[in-house]
Amino acid sequence: MKTSQSFRVHFTIRADKAKEGKAPIYASVTVNKQRCHIALKQVIDVKNWDTGKGVAKGNREEVKAVNNYLTQVRTALGNCYQQLQLKGKLLSAEAIKDAFLGTGEEVYTLKKLIDYHNETAKSSLKWSTLKHYYVTQRYLEKFIQQKFKASDLYLHELNYKFIHDFEIFLRNHKPKDHQKPLNNNGIMKHLIRLKKMVHLAVRLEWITKDPFINYQLKILKVTREHLSPKELAAMESKEFTIERIDMVRDLFVFCCYTGLAYVDVIQLTPHNIVEAADGEFWVRTFRQKTETPVNTPLLPKAVDIIKKYKGNIRAEVSNTIFPIISNQKVNSYLKEIADLCGIKKNITFHLARHTFATTVTLSNGVPIETVSRMLGHTKIATTQIYAKVLEKKISEDMAALRKKLA
Image 1 (cartoon, rainbow, N blue to C red):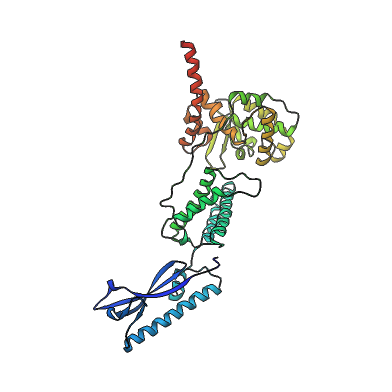
Image 2: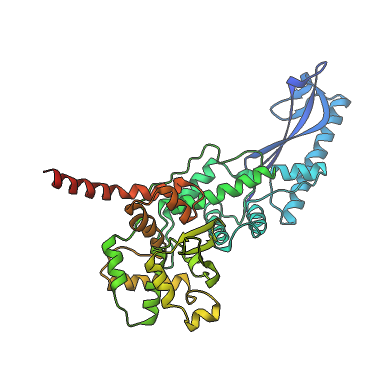
């Protein structure tokens, strides 16, 4: 909540609504430069109104009665302001208006919106997705505290400047722990999540204006890193004496030949490996992220890895194909594996999925529509991101052609 508030009441008339020379009187309530008007159901002769002072002028009894009424209204509005302040309520011109008129309509805040979104989204979003909203919430709390010296803001205080300033805050934010500063697309993801929640507020009619209406997200196109055939072969052929390293390498290579994400491969059970009508073994499962079906024929190297872990005690305990290991540990071990294999790229587990899309399938002539289905993409445009990486292969193929034609 804000530590200091500015509160002002001024009375005005609407001359454009005057009838027979008499205009309606309005109370103009201003809190922190935000204003609202309250129709007082009182009228005054236009010529008897002092616009500068906001009072009726003259000594007639009718004029005195109007001014006495305005004094009472001013006192009542002041009391409403004090009561809201004492109750620890968020103060706004609209809140004071509601208290004065007795409507008692709830004043919605950003924190209330985020809490409502996160609570209602539990049934539709996976925890792996929902947890990112909590991270966005923490950034918003830090920003509001730093920028406004407040713990919360009204939804109607959100505007283009708020969004722009939040973006600048994220760009300049330097984490105190060991995290890396946010890159452009990481910043945009936080803004996308804020935008989704704000749009929810619009649909709920908690706010009437969308502050994102003129804001453009600036997503930068990035090249999806993947292992080259040489790098993949080096990882496959490398012998490891440490069991945990060997297992993580196998898990990673398996996904290079199936396109599965970490969360999907770690949950694979023997029931997900089926013999299809063509006599070959397939992986049949659902992507946890999108719940879309995944049906992928197993290549020989993937089959060999499954056979290697058949009868593994740790896997049998969890009734999974592979022993259970956290994504954090997998990514940590992959960095060791990359060093041991002489691979200079920053390898994370998701790079296996990229390798399947590029090195294993698209580079070997598998149609993009087929690759899209095996990856479980809901849009082929998502798969086309990987296809753009193949310009290097086109260059290599044309160089070989030039030599033949020379």
